[in-house]
Length: 371
Image (cartoon, rainbow, N blue to C red; front, side, top):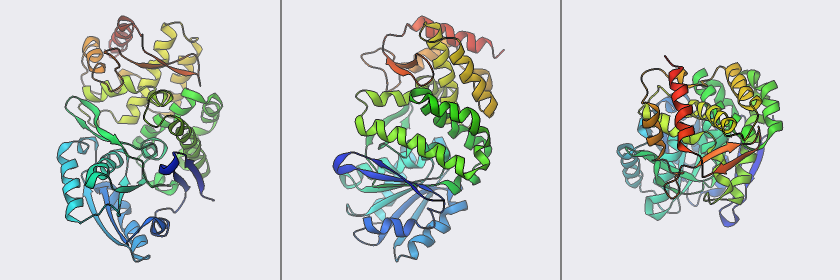
């Protein structure tokens, strides 16, 4: 299979997203043109390190690149102040200079945390993303959003810091646990729902076979990255169109906070549930036909991912409390909740004037269905 190259056009900060098999084994050769001295520092997590780190370090050694690595605990709880401080101080101990490169080798948690560390280290060090999950390959590794979670909410501290290069190795996805693969699929289907109805049509036909088919996986990752790269190129810092990428996320972030950023609910699962709720909300507001939310739910169910609040184990706050959690979201503007709604599949838009009582009613019904 060939390697697909998707450019992210940001003028002097432009870079490539390379998508294909075997990219971990060729990472040293691919990074070499970007290095001013043959030294890199790798930030990863313990799960990824056990599976793939030796191969990555061997690829650097083959090019005479000195590489050191720090493996943080796996999981969303790592994406906070303590492990961020640990990673930043470790990078300083490695004597990483402004001309060097930090490598983020892992899923979205590692990419966000290591990218943020690179952004603030010596006021900005270059970094390369080597995403190892479906979610990070199609979404979080592209676009330069970096950051950590705080007790007040998700991703409330961070910076825009574009990577120098993204290497998405399709082969790695075959090693993902099924739940992690399906969680990543929540971000894939989002792209069809927000702006490409034809891609959603393709997913309905092909996505059930994607986990076991490298060709299908590569197309799905490439199309998702093409859509995100186009949006980021036009709206880097989310002044307008880029907000569409948050389809499902206002619900998702509140649910993640309600479940303590734990493995009760993975981010991509929250996105899938959030997309289903966003389409249901759109239908209740008279924006789209009932067919749209029904089709979204039917497809997510056919994939085996989480779709409803009743799919989340354990207790959840009541509707009023969930609505209050949404008030802490980054997407609040002038105190008003901002939702991404849809007029149909592939027709999402930003809405700033959503009545809170309609959202509360929707959540109350979804919570009632749990009992």
